[in-house]
Length: 135
Image (tube, rainbow, N blue to C red; front, side, top):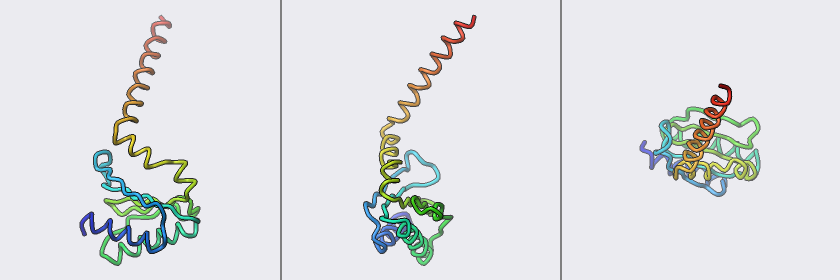
């Protein structure tokens, strides 16, 4: 099964159980172990678990592989690992708090990388200053 077929199956499975606000992120430039991230919202923990279960079932029925599911205990954030695609099913408050879409878009534009680089430069400058003061 190719990536586009897998994504269509996942989207269909999400829509079957009424997932909301479905977003597909292309992370091929920033991630080496998966190509797409799909994020969807559920209105309850029960619905989040049902959505994850349906995604797993539909992918397996279509000949795909599910490598695991995490977070079913609490149901606030359930992650389904389908190899090339990671599916995040989250309650709206959890989704807003972690803002994966924002984080990955910042990674895409290099904003986080720039912040890390500038922080490292500041830390190195402070470290050098401290070394000079110690002598």
